[in-house]
Length: 228
Ligand SMILES: [Zn+2]
Image (cartoon, rainbow, N blue to C red):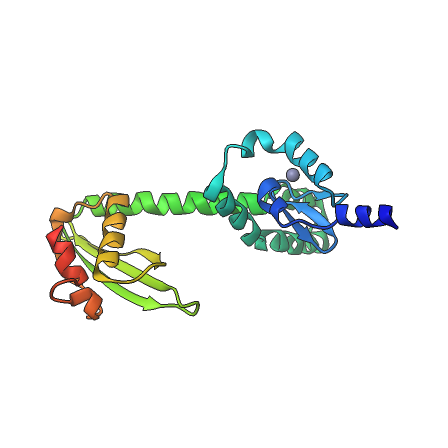
């Protein structure tokens, strides 16, 4: 019975493996999030061997919080695989000779995560470019609490070029985990403006939701932001 116990414990899923080896438990299997293959035996030795031989060269450099973020991204984007299996069933019935076309499409979690990264980088570059062409702009802010009680700060920008072309864009939504004083909001907005390389000397107007943390005479966001 002692041997059986050891064996049982050896096969118990350990949550730490998720981030260590980019895997998840799916029913009774262990699935690699990077290549989607199933790892036959739920033992760290087998999981580690899979990771070391196939992925460690590309993934060992991702450490700390970035590794946790990467792992969460991969877990979240699993719709692609579902869509792919639907497509496969469809094509098999409608046009079986084109089956290999669908098989070639990669909709794995990893690919989805990478594409979404590419898209957001592209949007950021586009925003930077549009804003840099504006000769004057104003910003609008609203801060509200979401269902999980986290404060979310939403920032919009409206700018105009020398040719009177108007750009109005959603800039960002920042989750504020600490307090939401005028100082905190000021830090968030400054961070955002630096990230998007926005020249604050072209700022001509600020619109807020009118809350005390925004318009307070001494410590409100507007007062602090203009003092910076
Ligand atoms: Zn793998």
